[in-house]
Length: 469
Image (cartoon, rainbow, N blue to C red):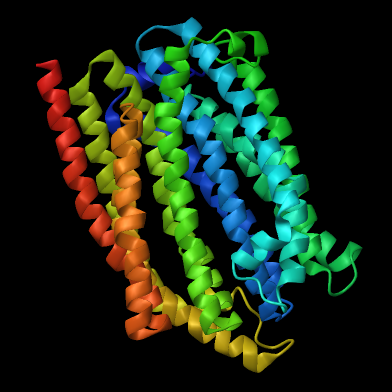
């Protein structure tokens, strides 16, 4: 008996004519899976370090999260900037220009990664002190940052940029597989390096080595997948094509890439402010806030997956002139993200103590210190999780504007969201209500930013309608 194979949908059909829910699912599900696996492997370090019962190790890894997030910002500069422009050029049928943009983005990501590694290595200790490291935590923080940032930024930044480029060319599954490979490998290597190969007291160093090796493996796979995808998509690694790219296309990459990087950089700046304010209370408040920042990334990972899956479809239909389909994609993605955000609020309110308890063992080490840290974390989580729908609204709006090449509006939104709304709320509410106010600043700041975001997106869509009329 013959079995009929389901015809494979081309990338053009997926973006242009496949029913919106199915197209969004095809692009978003692999991205969500990779985001969650990537999240798990970023959390694995904290989970295993938490088994030591050492709150100071936990505080140190929380401080270095800011430096790790800078990797994400730099990857977005070329990954989202180049990927968004590649998708728009595909929609306009300009394949040669798309190849040049992709090559420029890969080599640009490699160059900026090496620059960041060099600067971080030269100013590591002053930077860690600025981020809030105390005498009790700086040794652990230095060990982690030296391996993951100074040595490991190149494969980390390059792998994220390659994944963005693959996803925007329609190869969401391959992008997700590469990032997932790094996550699964890190989960396997963490306990090996932390508890078997290295001696007791070197758990943070072991976690850092496992992370750097996992990122390197993921980068190797994504380079291979990128090369394979270039046979059927306008992707390239040739430095000759990167150097031949005209100024107009380079400007288009940076028009979206810079605001995207600034958005992540401002988010990083907000985390720096959180750490500095928390450190003024105690190292235990820093550790508790660090635990919460990891737990609350679960809904963020899902919602970012939705937004990243949405971006190339919106960009393609924007360039091809199918604005009705573009708006349908935007509406469908928004509804999905808000439903997930509401569900996560319910879960975290009910299970906050259980969720944060996974990250710090209260039966080993200094039990009294660990218990106080977990109590802080549970309180902070119940307050900060209320920001989830507003955070999604801000992500969704930003990705929509990036897909349409609206760099200035994206940058304006990022500035208002973090500098005008969130960071001032942080200092004001902490002064009024202490560490509880610091936690409450997130839902208040994100809520104000979301109101501005919705008004800005409505204005952009109205302008686009007037332009095309």
